[in-house]
Image 1: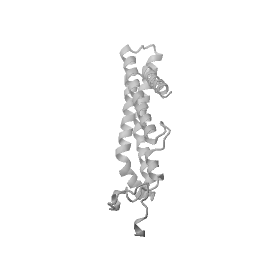
Image 2: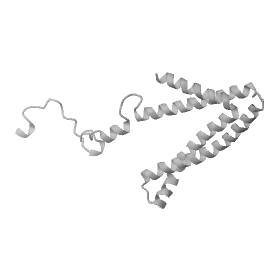
Image 3: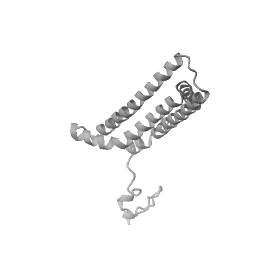
Image 4: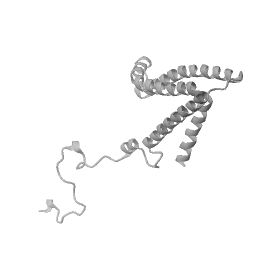
Length: 174
């Protein structure tokens, strides 16, 4: 079922690319990549500044700053893509027929963008454990009981793990 959803998503992106052409899909893909990279690189400094300026905890301000940066960068590049799309639609209404390389190139770029989105969604699903019906690794660390003293490397305890069957009589009875 996941394969079918991934195939349909890639095919839908290829269809959008067929309609938008090479320029439209290139601008759309660049806006996604540029927004994501800018958000990842600038989230911590902008979040630290936002935390100091507004008195927010870092746990709130860093993701909020990253989301704002992604929105601003992606939105500004998407505005350019919308302008290119409007020009293309006006030319299509006037009877202009786009060349086949433009449609096929846009379809190929759309399929690549769709594959990237599917891979990213799969990575997020695998990282959170939702694809395999298991609890996320981070959640296991939060909710699991602490390891016994003999398994903890920081305990400094060098004794071996006790055996499952105790010896009789116990050593303190001697």
